[in-house]
Length: 112
Figure 1 (cartoon, rainbow, N blue to C red):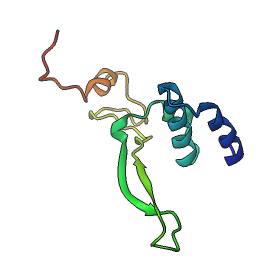
Figure 2 (cartoon, rainbow, N blue to C red):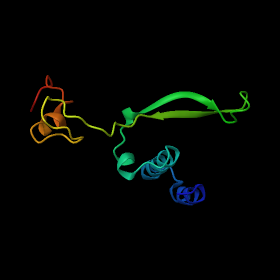
Figure 3 (tube, helix red, strand yellow):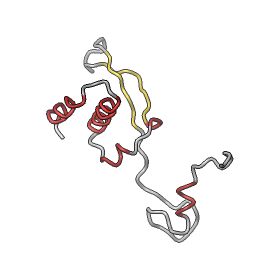
Figure 4 (cartoon, rainbow, N blue to C red):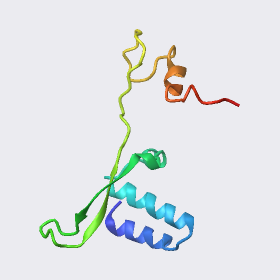
């Protein structure tokens, strides 16, 4: 997508309604982060976006107005099975698939 096309698409979501704000944010994040895949953009969580120090609008002029800056923490693409097994694949082995999908759960949390 070129900047001209992005500008035209952004003109369709100029309101202050929540869907307009959401769509504008998603489009800008996808474009500014180097053309992320739709799956990467749609799976982003607020926790993955970290505010950075503002940057000068003109890098050659440190006195120029500043712009907000964000860092997007993307997940790793490679996967190794966390258990010692014969799987050398980058995908979870069938034996440990359930463990890897629930390993981040808080096991001490009350259930019910």
